[in-house]
Amino acid sequence: MRNASIIIATPIYAFGAAYLAEPLMGWHLDTASLVEWFGGLPYPTRLAIKGFFGFPFVFHIVHGLKHLIWDTGAMYTRRQVWISGWVGMGLSA
Image 1 (tube, rainbow, N blue to C red):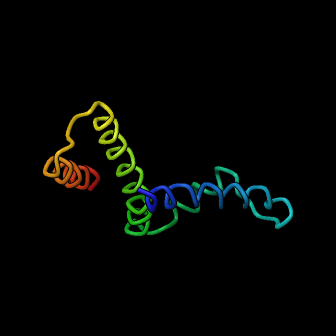
Image 2: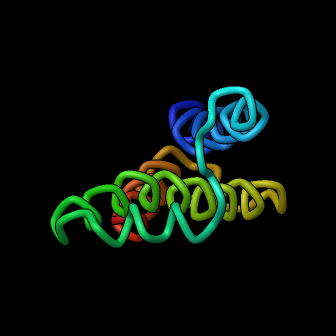
């Protein structure tokens, strides 16, 4: 779960820092420029980027729901924990 959080949060902080440095560096990080840049990438590259960021996001949500189920006191046996982990991986993919 920690790696998923890092993959989700790092680009947010990096973009925030780049956005603050934009006037000093002469960059153009407005929405239109970013959409044009991303749209210009080859389709397989766009798909890989979306998958790279989409998987940890969905993984985090699914396993967060698993923890909410655990908070109710359900699914505490070793077998249920193991099954819920693999179900979470399957739903994330």
